[in-house]
Length: 450
Image (cartoon, rainbow, N blue to C red; front, side, top):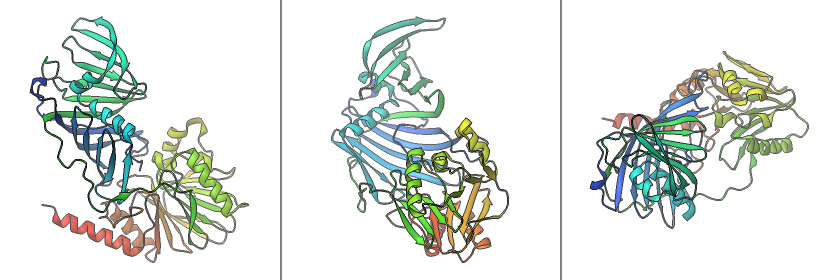
């Protein structure tokens, strides 16, 4: 899964709006629901993007402080929940459910916290207008209204162009790569809140949001960091960790993603190629240190989501076969275009790949997260490789499993019940005991629901 959560605002919600006259010069709460459209992350590989449901809350004040509580849900029941805050001195972000970042706390300096605050103000155009700086622009008249266009900068210093109507209401604000459109104002008051906001990036719509506001002070504890979180350490150099004879996982990458490696007599099998060419090239250099003369015979793609295959081209050797589930080839073609690898093969039933003295078992799985999912295992060591079906954070307690983990457990029980370790693209390597505990916690969560 893509990391997400780059903290650009992509939020939404609907509720009655307040007028500008109702707003004190203190702070406001935004209730945000809607959809984000995420390219290269579709459940169905024939589709170019995935709609992701969100339900967020944002508190802003006029002094530059904010609190942002995010909630998003992806196919397979995968949920992200983050708490993020910022002040003039800096900010921090923490993973509420502790499944992705665990107990690691990600801090931001004053400049980053300010930019994150300004990003949030794009959801509150009455506040945003007070921060836009520019010269008087051009009037454009049409049959129904008069629009004015201005150019200048936002409070983060980024160049922007914005338009507003003859009531003084913002209609759009465009940064070099991102454009916001404001729709469905409830009345002609210049400080009204638009009920809907569309966000575009690179010409493609990335969000359809419903936003409502109300007068509300920032919670008194908005800067509080709950007990148990620790600052995320500075990444060390990437390295290969030995999991079993001939079996490795590449750790400590800049992105935090992992690549699995199995070395046999006749060649090498690699599992997933995150996240871009630069990181994949560094991973390939590590693989070359492990086995300088052996070719990479296979790259097994757990599923064709962009963050799992973005570095694919940098890992290829001249005769490398890329193995995907059904439909994965179409998704790779859409991503790589004319640079598409020539040797891509889809599999629709159980199969084994040979590395000479050891074999890799492959099982297609039409998962609720991605229909072209593959699960792989080094038969000799009982090491299973998977992407997004099960999660443990790098550091922190075992979280409750997501619903789609049941799909993985069922497959393992049927095909390789004596497996010994589970390698994921995210988080630390899991044991059978870890998986059982996580599934048990999931069952307890389900029973506690009303």
